[in-house]
Amino acid sequence: MLFLSSQILFHDLKGVCSLPENIVLYLQQAIPDLRRSSSQREKQSMSAGIQDSLMHSSFSIEEERGVTVKYRLGLSLLFGLLIMVLAACGGNTGATSAPTDAQTVDVKLSEFSIDVSEKNYTPGKTYHFVITNNGNTSHEFMIMPKSEGNMSGMSMEHMDSMALAMVDDIQPGETKTLDYTFTTSAANTQPEFACYIAGHYEAGMKQTVSVKQ
Image (tube, rainbow, N blue to C red; front, side, top):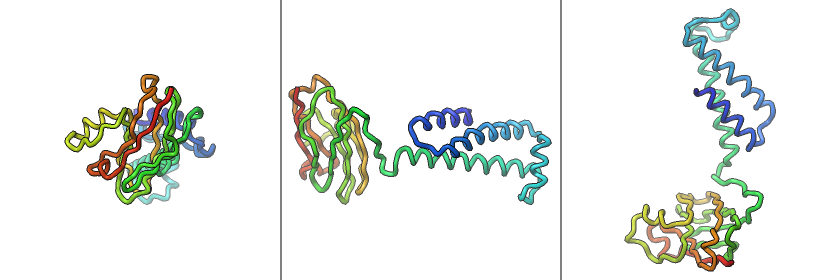
């Protein structure tokens, strides 16, 4: 099941990531090779090809341990590549590219303000929020349906449930993204972008915007 999942994952990743062809070919060969090696190991048998390979192996250990070491080494290399591919796809900041039909909105967080490049929005249109923390402490970005004022007496879980969308735990210097589409029912309303980490909203981390028909 583990190897099958790996094959499916690489098949999917190839469609969204620009992987070098030599890496794709290696992974396509490595996964079934490792699966066959695992099956032979479980049956505690060795093929003539593996025995011949072990005779010329640089590992100076007995044959059975040699197969185990090769299997584990191959598996480690494979999943090391998995980690690198996932990192390449997601980026090192947690940011993702915008959908083709989305409008990009830059959001700058600091102590203690929220600055946005767009304050007027249209229902049914997708917006790609690129949120950067330029401050010295962690922040969050919440899209509230309207100004809720000071909610210091409310639990964070309740606040989160009220938000239309949110991105939390944005560390200093980090950039995260959020794709959001205001529904038609949001027409002619004034949502509020806010950070409700304790004391941040009260210090000024809020920005009223408009959704116009």
